Image 1 (cartoon, rainbow, N blue to C red):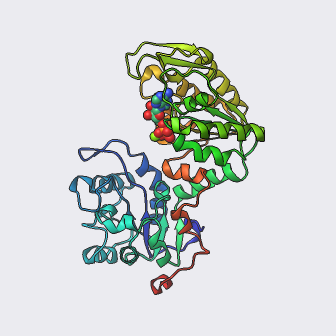
Image 2 (cartoon, helix red, strand yellow; image 1 turned 45 degrees about the horizontal axis):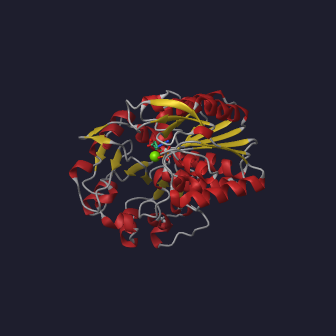
Image 3 (cartoon, rainbow, N blue to C red; image 1 turned 180 degrees about the vertical axis):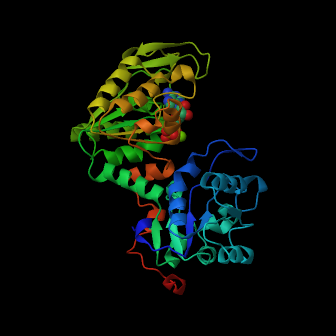
Length: 402
Ligand code: ADP
Ligand code: MG
C-alpha cells in the first residue's frame, strides 16, 4: 500500500475518499472530530499543488437525495478550518460535477455531494465506480471508518487508478492496528467490554494467540461468568453465547492466557439513572439485582494489569457508562491507560466517547476512530477498502494510465 507522500500530485486532481460522516443536529455539526482527523490529508494535497476533490457519505439516505443529509455543513466547516474556498457540487457524478472538477483551480477544494444519495454506491456498482473515477487523476483513501465496506467509493473505484494511495489517517490506523497483531511488545493486555459477546468474540479469538492477559468487563462479562456457573442475578446474559464463552475460556487456559473476569460488581435494581446500587462480591450476586459496572476491586486488578502492560488495547466500556453513577469502572480504565508507559490503543465508539469525556484522548498512544472497521481489522479479516489499495492489485482500465 502506497502512502500519499509517494505520489506526485502537483497539478493533478486528487479524489479523496474521506469519512466525514459527522453527527448533525438540524444542519449543525455537533462533533467535528471526523472532519478534523482527515484535515492533514487534504492540507497535504493543497500544499503540494494537488486539486482535492473530497467525497464522503453522510448518514443513511438509503439511495436517494435527502436535503437534510447534504454535505453542505461539512463543506462549510472545511472552508473555515482550511481557510480556502470550498465549492459543494450538486451531486457526486454527472456532467455538471465533471465540469466543476475540470475547472477546479489550485488552492480550491471541490466537495462532492453525499455518495449515498445513489444506491449504486453501497452496491459497489462498477459503472458508478467508473463515473466517480472519471473525476480525478489520483485516488486517495482516508476513510478508515468505511474500509470494511466494499462500496464503489471505498473499493470499486480504486482499480481505475494507477496512482492510488492511503491518506494519513488511514495509514496511521493501519500502522497501529497491524503492529498490535504482528509484533506487540509483551506483555500485551487486552481490556474488552461493552454490550455484547457477539460483537467482540471475533477479536477475542484472534487475540488469543497474541495476548498474555484479557481483562473482561461490561455486559459481556456476565455471559463469561455464567459460563463459569457464577451467579449473575438479572444481569444481561446472551444465553446462546454461554457455550462459546466456555470454549473460549478453555482455549485461553490451554494456551496459558490469563483471563481476568470481575471479582466484584456494582449491582443495581434497574439499569437507569437514579437506581439504587451497591457493590457486591462476584460470588454473592443477589438474584434480584443486575450488574451495571465493575466493582472497585476489579478496577484495581485491571488497572494493575494495564500498568504492567507494554501493549494495551481497550475496547468496550466496563459498565453502563452513559449513566454517571455507573461510569466509575470505565473511568478507572481510562485513567489506568494514561499511567501505562507502553503503547496504548483505544477503539470503539462508546469507549472513545468515554475517554473524551474524561479529557484523556491525548493521553493514549492511538485512538482508533474506525469503529466497525477497527473491530474487523482486529478480527484478522481482510478489509475491502485496504485490499483495493494494494499495489499488487493491477489497474484495470485505460483510464488508469493517466
Ligand atoms: P464500543 O462502542 O466502545 O465498542 P459497545 O458498543 O460494545 O462499546 O458497548 C457499549 C455499550 O455497552 C454501552 O451502551 C453500555 O451501556 C453497554 N454496557 C456496558 N456494560 C453494560 C452492562 N453491565 N449492562 C448493560 N449494558 C452495558
Ligand atoms: Mg458502541
